[in-house]
Image (cartoon, rainbow, N blue to C red; front, side):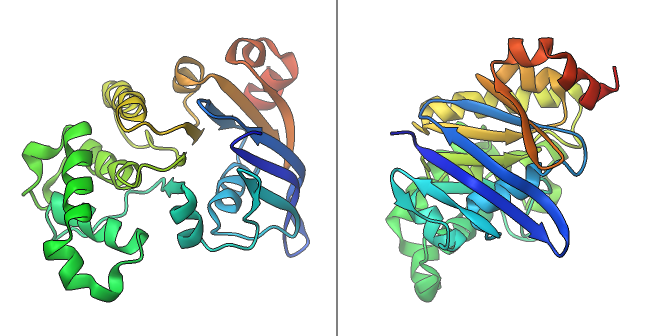
Length: 248
């Protein structure tokens, strides 16, 4: 049994079909990049897996359990966590406090917010561990607004990793950072997957160097359908993919 299965999933926005009968199986220990031209359905697919959207038709199965109608918080507790393209943080809270707030919300402890925030040992341990893994511990008392852009990205990703999910979804984590920062960020992410024992990763990314260097598998979406789903080497050699992606 695979970790996650997307079965015959279709998603309409009004009359527009964003995804068309998509089948996708995610196994454990896979690093999957989803690529495609603008409007191909990449972010829609991530949002369906995370629970931010519900499919018009089809099912989403996690370890044999139908999670199609579950909320993002319910899926989070089962082990699916999504990080966003645009970093989400509280600018006037410290790096450490931002991570604590994110974890309290994700773990459903907001009803006892003050207790969780100040005394919850699980929250404190998860937060500090994530900051150490992502190299942010020395900046734990910095206000988030004062962090460099690359560190703001790290903070957002660290919030997702801190929950130690089975499957982590990243939507363009390297957007808006320099070439060197991209390499550093992806190196940190790959190290964090091992150190925090996270099984699988699905990444939406436009930078083909990132895609081909850090993926074990590449899924190509075009007009809401899967055009290719194979190794980076085979996708790179696919002339139809080259035509769709680069017009050549």
